[in-house]
Image (cartoon, rainbow, N blue to C red; front, side, top):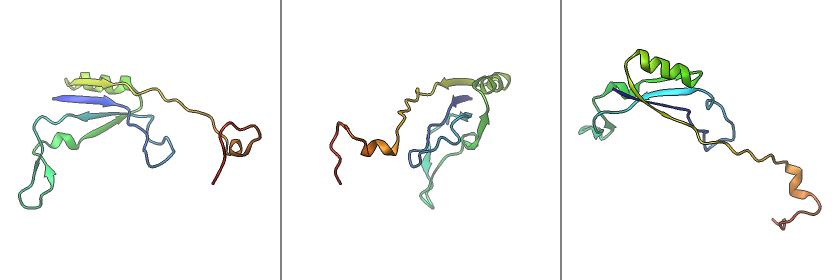
Length: 101
């Protein structure tokens, strides 16, 4: 069984960074997902894909995978570039860009 260890990205719909500090271990599906003939929902027979474990650090997730005998891939997060901004900068004197409605 193969697992994927990663840090979840920030939600694109909100500006907060909640739930992005923890590390997640997910199992990778071994067979393809297929539509259910009756309802049309996409699913598969592999119940391990429903398991999602969270850890405080990457090392804890790696230790768990090694203790459980899992093959794993670690995906490192992209570096975050935060530009400090202030609302008052929209109205400051000497602004380079034009300010219009």
